[in-house]
Length: 572
Image (tube, rainbow, N blue to C red; front, side, top):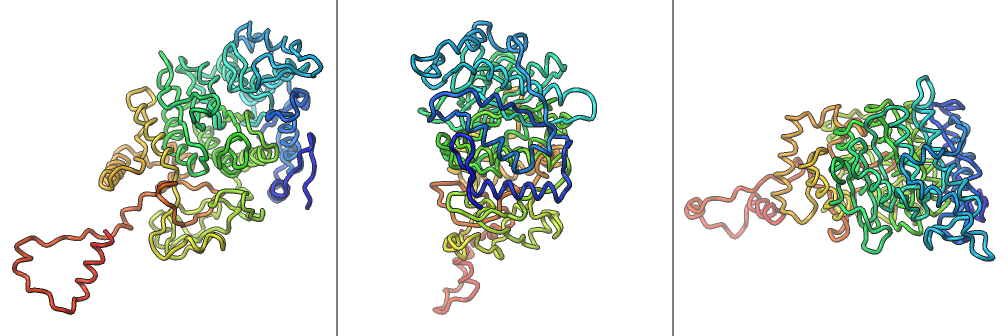
């Protein structure tokens, strides 16, 4: 199977072709055909917005997404919606008239001898078709919202494959490749036309959605959550954890800045300890996702390590939360992501996940059909090897039967029977001291700080676990307090956000696409999971001074129990 070129000179990778073929076979095997209750909206005219050939936000992004949706069979399986342009009235719910006029007049800013200009700054171009494309991009998402919120048996969730993106656009300024804030306009449509009172926005683009943040910073009816990379030199330089909104909206803006290179386990930690508790507290009537895929491993701008399966896992959890709280109203809108092949794979995973969830099916990641490559995924994703069998003893403790689906692996590692994930990983698996990999230390600290700030605000959620650097006793005491509060408050019951999204697994969540890999990780790179209490050695009770004085001196040949006691002391 050779790579196929797509529009703009891009080629579809072997991995993408294998993913598409597996998805198509999965659709056929489960008879998921046209008319499934998942909507898809786009418009080929959006490809007309073009600037410099080497610009990251180029038509090839959308062209490759449309191609992979087509060859995977997902386009045919979804309900195709008609596109439309946004009206002035709809845009004015968010943007100023001056800004709307500037976007619609941007075609006149072309540089001499070039087909485009840069009226909004050096990074945001415009050509003759930009006004049409900007209006279409917002209008496509509005079409999705209108269709899914109307009464009847139609779709309740869907994906808008649109460009230019929107989450950097503020009330009166275009920025960061964005003209109109598509998600913000759609949120106001849901509220003012369809009567929704509480709407949540989850922005997982690697760049902070500063435009959406600022638009809703004083609005308590919109919960805005962003997880993003935060460096002093990384665009846009906003989204610090202390930014929690203003006035009545204070506490309804939640930002989780992560370090460069964050991956699947980091976003899983954020999902468990921030997103799920926030949704449980807020109980939205619709959930919007600013679905930027520039945190995928291999993106030229994001420089992070989230896998396409990781985005599918996030979609799965958010859909289940939407199904529980808001009748399945989940709307994904394409934002950033600048490797056309990779963002198309992420799109395939997200749309396929929606189809799997609405039909109650397991996804095709069980078979792991794609051959491993050194740069294909994280060490704990399907590309690295087969599933690890669960320990029978630990399975009984988790309350699961031996017939648990392979795509929902047990989250307690089997230290005794786990085979190495791959030949290259086997040297790292020693006979002792092995720990399951966890999120980065900065991720733990950011999530913890965010939950601490929310304690005195309307969206107070339980405190997240401490990061590394605190004493073992403090961690142990916190686990006991957390366990006690869970029993008293019913936090681990089926009504909690985490239980709704992922079954309430007590251990750190690995995505269904990941495999349980037990490996050594240095404390300087990532924190390790807290060892469950049942795995700790028994406490060593030291003898009192008077007992030592009355004891006979030890013989030259130590007894076996003394050797065991000394070994335990050394281990402790």
